[in-house]
Length: 122
Image: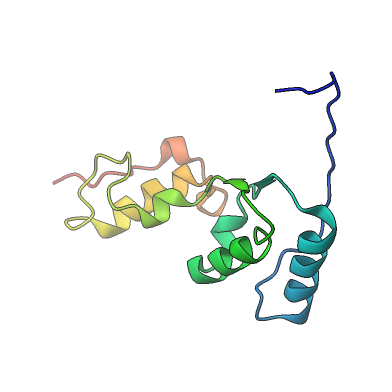
């Protein structure tokens, strides 16, 4: 909802680090004291953080009030068992890993993935 027909968008960037580091604490303090965001877009930062560290940082920079956080994961297929892959990982773990690598854009050492037999013939 726009009030008085004005829209303000402020963009800040910086290296996001765990609160276990001085620079992580510094950026959290800057955001808390100066920015006081209503929403935070994490992009796929969640792929590079331990869940505990991400939640600690998110709580720290949201301490001023209600903040909507949104993010997405590029690596979700690596951690969600059988996620959108109709393939039996227990019987052929290496074949399943090839499929996951293909989904992540791996190039199989320069080989054409369309010419690779991903499923072993029984």
